Image 1 (cartoon, rainbow, N blue to C red):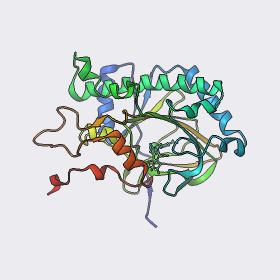
Image 2 (spheres, protein in one colour; image 1 turned 60 degrees about the vertical axis):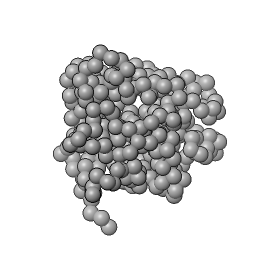
Image 3 (cartoon, rainbow, N blue to C red; image 1 turned 120 degrees about the vertical axis):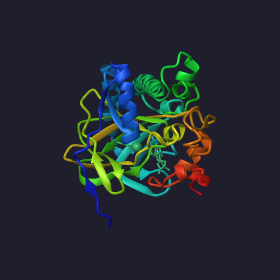
Image 4 (cartoon, protein in one colour; image 1 turned 180 degrees about the horizontal axis):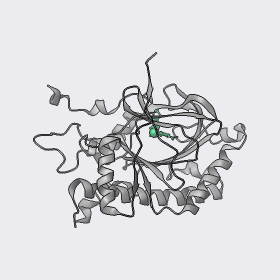
Length: 310
Ligand SMILES: C=C1C[C@]23C[C@@]1(O)CC[C@H]2[C@@]12CC[C@H](O)[C@@](C)(C(=O)O1)[C@H]2[C@@H]3C(=O)O
Ligand SMILES: O=C(O)CCC(=O)C(=O)O
Ligand SMILES: [Fe+2]
């Protein structure tokens, strides 16, 4: 068995969004070094968070037979232990929702309202973080078309963003969600006080992400953002292994472009010294590659421009 090491001397940085110019520098640094950071003073009302957390708790406390009625996840719906379609398993049950999908209509009005309210609020936050990132990457730009180059993809009415609720039982360290990268642009995660999320800083070396202070969101770079920043930002492998008598609940908003959007390096980030690392593709093409593979498979290498290595 591969030897593993846990490093608890590294902390995911906490970034205060109320100071935009400082936040911009800190976000760039975090995305280059760890691919993960937490945000506070993010503007998402606590009431909106509490409402959806309460609905999620109520959903997971229903009897199995009732939850099964919201499944199987093909790809949206309720799932238990099986993750994706290629045989990956973990100590987790989950609900995967596409906010534009009719699947939401199988839930109560309460649930639907709370989920839609939450999605609107986290979408706004994701867009703000992406605008701050672009500012840090290319400097302030009075042209809104250029400064919103990333957030526009998320605001688009055809954006393929999804919402995931995870519920992990108490455990002695078993794998709840195996190691993987998130395929989309950016992930915004909230969790209850039970720890379990770990990020990989090098092969076999894991950094636990401490349960976020009550008000924080944990944010991570997805594969698409790695491509759009020409590898400057890192889509980092992470996993969940709960070691607690408490169960862990998490909610992840995966901010994604529309299926037809073309994904390529942002203007100015590929240069003669650092040519584009990846070929362009549509999000639909990438998603198909992602969703037909194992959880831990690397997908970005399918789009790497190999000629650069030769
Ligand atoms: C095994 C898989 C589950 C996943 C689709 C995939 O084929 C590979 C990527 C997985 C992942 C990880 C991040 C998100 O939780 C997720 C919803 C996503 O977009 O990609 C899951 C997919 C899933 O659970 O269906
Ligand atoms: O539950 C968590 O903390 C993380 C889950 C995750 O990585 C995912 O849903 O992609
Ligand atoms: Fe993830």
